[in-house]
Amino acid sequence: MVDFNALLPEMIVSDIKYSLKFYCKVIGFNIEYERPEDGFAFISYHGSQLMLEQGRPDVSPWRVEPLEKPYGRGINLSIECPDVNALARTLVLSGHALRKPIEEFLYRENKQLQGESNFLVQDPDGYLLRFAQDLGCRPLPRDEL
Image (cartoon, rainbow, N blue to C red; front, side, top):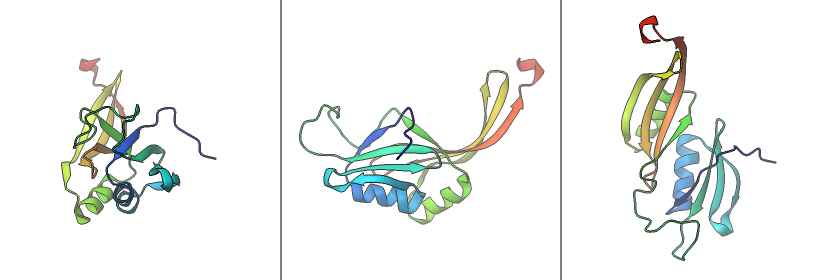
């Protein structure tokens, strides 16, 4: 039995087999279950979960039209990653260009700074993925409190 996250994005894809190759073979997601007859797969990666659904030409209440590439404009999915350097290298070697190279950031979270190393890549349908590796926390400098 799968333990579902409270928020679980389901993304329409133009070619489910190609998307599964990208997510599972290149990145390392696991297929938790799939319904090939429906063009559907539930996948996970280090605690992150996604649902992928093969797009169809028929009208559906689950799809906001018009659906044009790149899909998912206006949103990026932040996905925890244990080793952004290794994953970025794997993506580039498999022919997937990074949209933004690996960078380190300190993000303010109330009275502390959260360190993160991340990069951006687009999936085959243009969904923007941010893979992020935790670099730990430190207190805010006194002059910024």
